[in-house]
Image 1 (cartoon, rainbow, N blue to C red):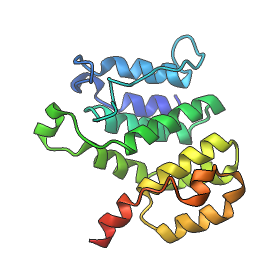
Image 2: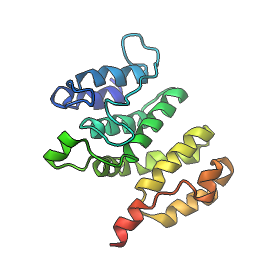
Image 3: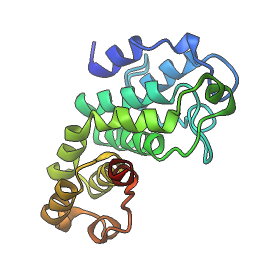
Image 4: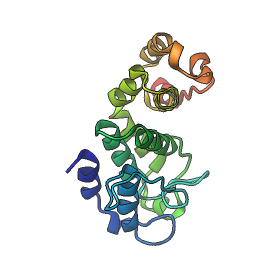
Length: 185
């Protein structure tokens, strides 16, 4: 069993309400397909839009999906799969609101996802510094701009990795200082 399977198995998917209105149980298989760990064994892109995230809100399974995405970054996965999970993680940390049903229960899903992603800072830094792909380095750096509280460290990495970061990351156009504002209070 790999890290992805272990993290998926540790979540209570059946007890979560999916954005589609059903139990989130089907998301476990969707994430396995995305990772290439489903019965077919071939990675397959699966959209989790309107199940875990939308342009406006995150749904209850978002923190569990964030944890699985971090596990994927620590696991041995194909470059395409790594890109898919980085994209998914970026959508989780960029969330702006919590669905109405979950919000009644109290959790701020976007903040919870950002807190979880911050636990994987070194996975994200490794992705940037590995220079495996421009797309992956850029996505990981953009996630870091949301979750990294140490802005000086982020700036040092920007300078070191400037040659292989996209222009928006090199220039600071992608920066999100949400964490910086929170820490300055």
